[in-house]
Length: 223
Image (cartoon, rainbow, N blue to C red; front, side, top):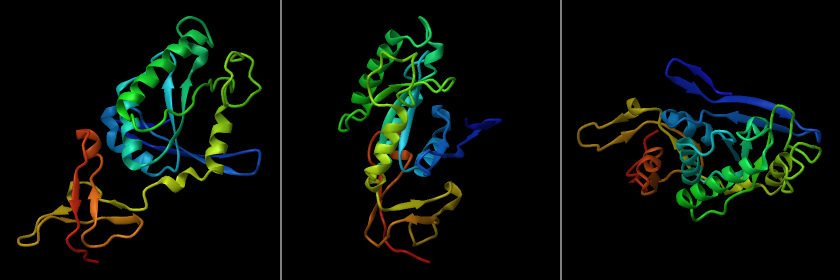
């Protein structure tokens, strides 16, 4: 899970070796809206996103935040996991609770990112590995794609190619300057892509927070 210290929460990385000798790097980010900058940074580090929604809690404000942020950064959400199916309201592994959460997720998806198709909504339980492959017995009523298969299929289709080619990172307001006669100057790191004068940059997370595109034009570049 994410590491919290005082009022700060950080994304956590971990490596998982799959049976086909491939390695999957997992970035677990906080889901609370008050940690928006860490959510954005965790998604920025990722090629693909699996959105987790707790079965007993359902859709929260952070769920919508992640949907909008992934859309803004063009990072594909390949699946939505309904987690902790072993701890649902009615009884463990309740299909009724799953269907309720699933309906809520689809309604929120249509509201936040209506231009994108909703990915598979998969019931899972980390307690005993249910939902990640086809061998589970507690979720026998679920007939959809498994958690690992949706990840393998996404990797095979090279979904990460959909990521925007240009990313310029500015570390906080301390790297923004306004010297006389020069306009606003940003000091940052060009992580991917190529940047040229007259290019337009979309500001994040400001655009996500305001729910509208906030763009700036590059006048010149100094090295």
